[in-house]
Image (tube, rainbow, N blue to C red; front, side, top):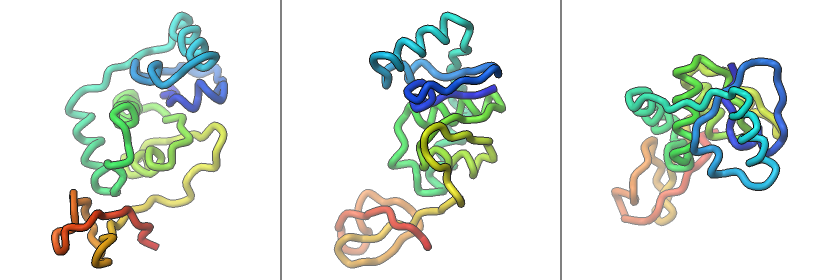
Length: 152
């Protein structure tokens, strides 16, 4: 089963396999992509609501990689749906692919190149330059904003 992100509808992803998504994806779509969602739903696409326990597990995985702050609620719910349905997540979103890798979910891209490696992001203070492995609201040393930094 393929679990479809908005990019799958926008880029006209096609498959003979069964497909699923979540209701919030429809809110991200307009014009032709929205019509494709409606048509696929009418043709039997499974619209899934993931369990809250699985959603919590996805949030923990996203927090561990440093992607939690850049993922929307819709992104997290799609990851949870793919996990629950043991599906292949179809997305061009790099942060979603990174978390999917952590959860050992298969992914397929539509219009972009996929990720080449999983990353655990670091966070660097914009004031004092110190690096942290965990996201904080502000630098615990000087109080400045933190920015996500590639660990390599």
